[in-house]
Length: 439
Image 1 (spheres, rainbow, N blue to C red):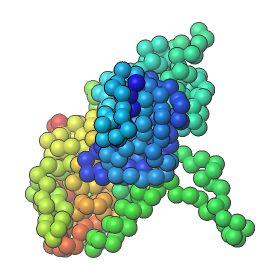
Image 2 (tube, rainbow, N blue to C red):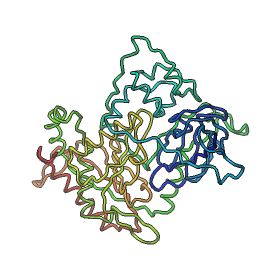
Image 3 (cartoon, one colour):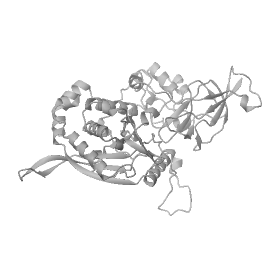
């Protein structure tokens, strides 16, 4: 027997610390390889940390809600077959636990049959639970979890005996592109607040007040928002664009696009494409301010936001400038599927160089976004509204108009640079006129 110290794993690029959201084991528990040890949260994602070993939990070193640097020892497991540990802790073998591995889209689809239950804290399962459920064709919504907070454990799945009516997998519905929503910062998957978190924490409050304990997600968002508005001098600009051509093109091609590509064509990919094209010509908006220098990003990776149920995710579309409108639509759909099935990883959430927000989802006509730190700009795509506009001959016509609102870092950009960028975004949008533009 030997002791293995598990460390807080690296949860993604630029992540330096993480918070223990909830332990799924206690001292004395027997754990199998791939059993979930804990939920850990960074400012980007919340993920389950599986065990790399079979053994017995001997000591828990970090408490829930405690934030520690990456690499901090968090747990001690007694493992069969390891060398005897001496009194000197430095002689004990140390291994790093790994976060849940990313699956391919096909794996995400196949595992989607194990749909979330009301007892599973929002439908996130350990790799072992998903693997066993997939192999046995078990519908996880039929299982009542015995783990902490009602979580479904590996043993729950192994011991479950489904009825004949429950053996048929349930297909997960596709998340539509319209669910692309606004976000002011890459946000990790939110946790449902427990009853304990909603209880007043002091008895000195007015009878009409209560204090709700902020969870790790909200704390991370608050930290980033304060950092952005404190360090970045925001400036704003708004333009209006006649997108009647895009409305007509989408109306003409949406049925065929659905038949050919198997997904709905929304307006959002047109705007993502137009922004990506403009960034190639105006790279200063694809930069960041670091140590009194401007760092230009060669890759164009646009952060977007996707809603999945009550949760909000902000993944990144990588190398957008190399994608067609059709390709962007497929990438949004792919990321939406991963969000819907709980398969987004930290790799999906990092690397963004600018943010495009679809605030028009809410019917918004004008908004001032907070820049996604440390990016240089964020553009808000508002709702399309038909209104009368003047024509060159002195008359009026009905047109589909939209406002685009840009927030930018005034340390990096001035009004001239921002204005030229917005002018090119507008011109790019008004060039989309035929079916070939989709590909």
